Amino acid sequence: MGFIGSGSIGRALARLAVESGHHVVLSNSRGPETLADTAAELGPLASAATSEEAATAGDLVVVAVPVSAFPHVPAAPLAGKTVIDTCNYGPERDGHIPELDSTALTSSELLLRYAPDALVVKAFNTIFFKHLLSLARPAGATDRSCLPIAGDSASAKAAVTEFIDSIGYGVVDAGTLADSWRQATGTPVWGTPYGPYSDEKGHPADEDAIRTALATATR
Ligand SMILES: NC(=O)c1ccc[n+]([C@@H]2O[C@H](COP(=O)([O-])OP(=O)(O)OC[C@H]3O[C@@H](n4cnc5c(N)ncnc54)[C@H](OP(=O)(O)O)[C@@H]3O)[C@@H](O)[C@H]2O)c1
Image (cartoon, rainbow, N blue to C red):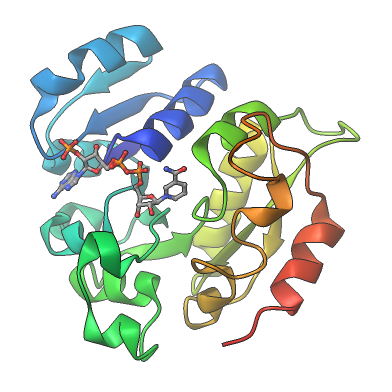
């Protein structure tokens, strides 16, 4: 797996991925040398590289950056690949982006503008990274949580579902990238189902809870 962005959510995902036996290649904006300690901590399945190299290395590539960094995501190596978009738009951090302010595009559709041949799947944007780490459970556990995913490619969604299952979560299909506003910042499914950030352990949210939250989204 390649990681474009290895901050809070990227590192949490990389940790769960390594624990489930996946190889991970981390990258950030400052260069691989700044990720040497993180890679060493994650163990022999982890390494650090440039964003181009991470995008090239992964069968599955995670984009976990501020939305304002989308123009710097390397497009060519992502062509034809399944790309997980964890990102949330926040004008206070990203500056105002007119297509997102007007809701003409979802943030994943904006990513697609910069990486037009990627098979983008929105996932993990709705869960606080500490909850992601603490709520992972094996298949069959009664307290397993679900995550919403959205995308336009059935095969990419299947690949992401398989990955998410491997790291300890079930999935609720929330539709297409155009539908992904239902899981955007501030919607009922965003953060809330797993409890407040002040409770670092969070609490499980099953399929019904995620479906209900998605169904009550408005804009
Ligand atoms: N934090 C959460 O719990 C959480 C949960 C779900 C979704 N998200 C969303 O996921 C995204 C990442 O959040 P985060 O909390 O992980 O942010 P973060 O801790 O600030 O990390 C951002 C990462 O993106 C990298 N980056 C920035 N510009 C880049 C570029 N041009 N090329 C390659 N890498 C670049 C940064 O590298 P440098 O440090 O070298 O600049 C850093 O590794 C955001 O859109 C956020 O809304 C966050």
